[in-house]
Amino acid sequence: QQPVQSPQAVILREGEDAVINCSSSKALYSVHWYRQKHGEAPVFLMILLKGGEQKGHDKISASFNEKKQQSSLYLTASQLSYSGTYFCGTEAQAGTALIFGKGTTLSVSS
Amino acid sequence: NAGVTQTPKFQVLKTGQSMTLQCAQDMNHNSMYWYRQDPGMGLRLIYYSASEGTTDKGEVPNGYNVSRLNKREFSLRLESAAPSQTSVYFCASRAGGSGANVLTFGAGSRLTVL
Image (tube, rainbow over all chains, first blue to last red; front, side, top):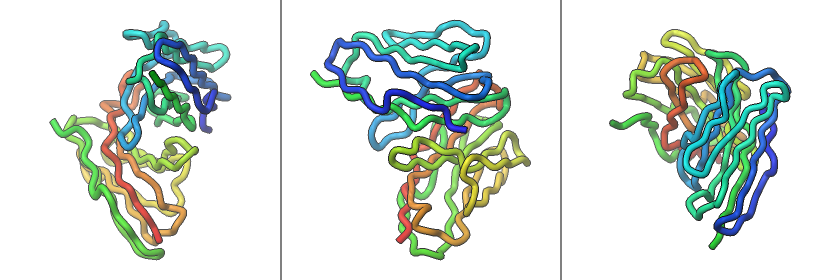
C-alpha cells in the first residue's frame, strides 16, 4: 500500500523552509527519501531505519516516528537547486521492495 | 562506471504489439526492480527480483512479465501492449534486500502505446 505524502505541492522563495510528510498504515522497517528533477531519474537523499536516529546533511534532514509510522523531510533555507519532486519510499520488512508515495513537488524561486 | 543502463530510451508501439525493456547493472547488486511512473501517481512497483533466480510481483504486475537473466540483467516484457501502459519505466538496483541499501535508478524508458 502506497504511503501518503503531504502536501502535494509547495512553493517557496529562496531561504524559506519546508516540511514534507510521509505516513504509512503499516509498521515500517525503513523510510527512504529521493528527489527527482524534471526529466531525470530519482536520486537518493537519505535513509531512516527502524530504531535509527534523525539523519541530515547540509540543510536537509529527516526524522522517523516509529510509533506513528511517519517520516518528515525538513528543508531549511531552501535554494533554487532544491526544486524537484520528492518521494518517500517505505519498506515494511528488510528484504522487501520499496513502495513509493505519489510525491511532493517543490518549487523554489528567487 | 555506468551504473544502471536501460534500453531503449524511447519506444512507440501500436496496441497489441509486444516488446522487451532491457536493464543491466554493473555494480554487482543482488536486487533489481521495475517501476512505472505516471503523472500524479508516483513510482509504482511492477516486479522485483530480490536475488538472482527469484522474481516477485509488485503493486501493478498485470500485463507484464519479467526475466532475471543473470545477476546483471533484468528484463521487462509487454506481451500485448495497451494504451494504459503508456508510461515512463525505471529500472533500479541495490546491493541487497535490506533497508540499509539505497536504490540506484536507470535513466528511464519512455514508452508510448497508440
